[in-house]
Length: 200
Image (cartoon, rainbow, N blue to C red; front, side, top):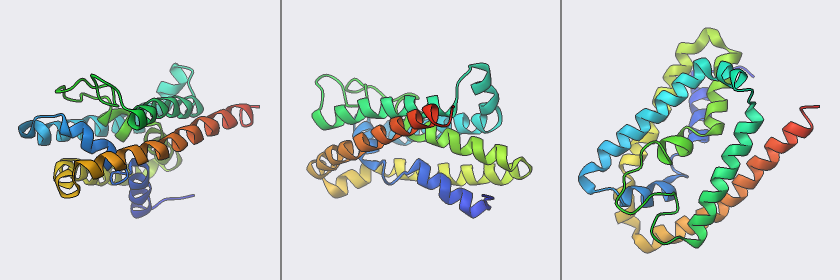
């Protein structure tokens, strides 16, 4: 299927899912000092953009050098999401559901990678670039706009938390943990299916 700039932008937004990730963004940003939140958000979005931008050009070569496939990316992403989902539902002591100690800023993990620049996003930019390489500037533009929208959502996460309240955010986080569990299982099963069926 050939994409236009608009269809690529919509596809990237669906994959990045900034609104659906708010229940994950909010508790992570809540542990960051207020005066640092905007800077941290911009930094993490910038890192995610760089990762996806680089993967757009060298992703296929990197997978070949490492003898990896998109299926392995899918399974690995599913396992990571499963661990995060379980922690979201049951909670942990001493650190957040995302492996962060209280008061520590997120750096690369988990905001930049894998929540923004996750396996599905990597596979999407890789497919866009490989199927229509002559329109690479359009794909870069679509990725830039999609990351800008995700960044604005992340910057506004604390305001949304204040609007909803901590109890509502906590309830949404646990609910999203259940949804994330199903998504993680689906990712693992899809990767295994493509490995055993498509790899024959």
